[in-house]
Amino acid sequence: MPNKVRTARLCLIVAGGLKIATAGLFLFILAVGSVFVGGSGERSGLLGNALLGALGIVLLLASAAAGAFDLLAASGVRRRTAWGRALGVIAGVLLVPLFPVGPVLGLFALTGLLGADGREWFSAGPVSA
Image (cartoon, rainbow, N blue to C red; front, side, top):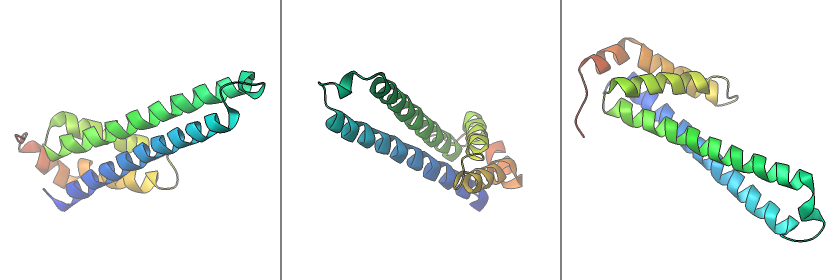
């Protein structure tokens, strides 16, 4: 595997790990918030608590799904599949606006996947296992 493609794959793995860690942080915040608000009482019946809880669950699921998407793209890049390259490019483009780390990871991923090394790596065909 060429160094630029390896770097692109590593960037996708790091981005996926960061997104899954973010999902874990959302889960922790939701758990701590539910302990402080409690399941009964006046505070638990407020509309704001319900909206923030639902928003937290949506953010948790979206962050976990985005992390799984990045890891799936990295797996496809390792196997030299066309869908892996396409997912990697999509993930790289989606990383660019995620300041402060996303632009660095996204640009390295795009450079590795769309450059000459990437074209050469993916033109050889898929690798089994």
